[in-house]
Every structure is written in C-alpha cells, then in structure tokens.
Image 1 (cartoon, one colour):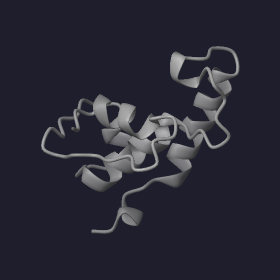
Image 2 (cartoon, rainbow, N blue to C red; image 1 turned 90 degrees about the vertical axis):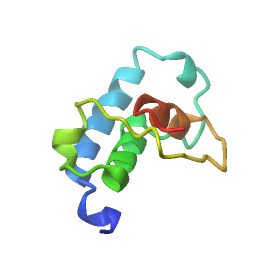
Image 3 (cartoon, one colour; image 1 turned 45 degrees about the vertical axis):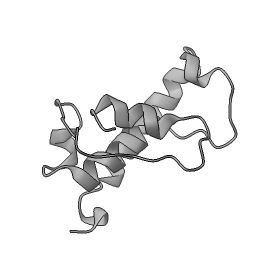
Length: 92
C-alpha cells in the first residue's frame, strides 16, 4: 500500500508546527546550527511510521515501536534528523 494512504498530513503538520515553535525557545544540540533546510523530527518519524507501520499514524505516533529489521539511509547527510528519528523507533 502506498505511503500516501497512511501519511496523515494535518496530524503531522500540527505536530511539526509545535516542534518548530518550541525550538525557538529551546534548541537541542542537533539544532544549534540553523541549517536552511532543517526539517522537524516529527516529519521523518511520521514518514517512517507511515511506510513501515500497520496502524493509523495518530495511534502509532505515541506508542512504542520495534522496527529492528529495517535499515534507513540518509544519503544527503544534512543535519542527521532522519537517522535520529529512525534510531528512536529502533531502525538500523
């Protein structure tokens, strides 16, 4: 099934907006350098869960995941956000 059927754009959009607003006051170490194309971690987590999860995104986002058999690559190696989020759901 294509990712488009599971990716809940309004849900991720609201989470990403909140994440970016929080980063204006508190900057984690990965966001010290304001890279011009920095994407919110919620976006990448949503993409991973939409692609490999088997539940609706709203249910899966805040529950434990175990994707140990899945390897994620970040070919552009910008800020490393995709790899950090993949690690949070136990991807390689």
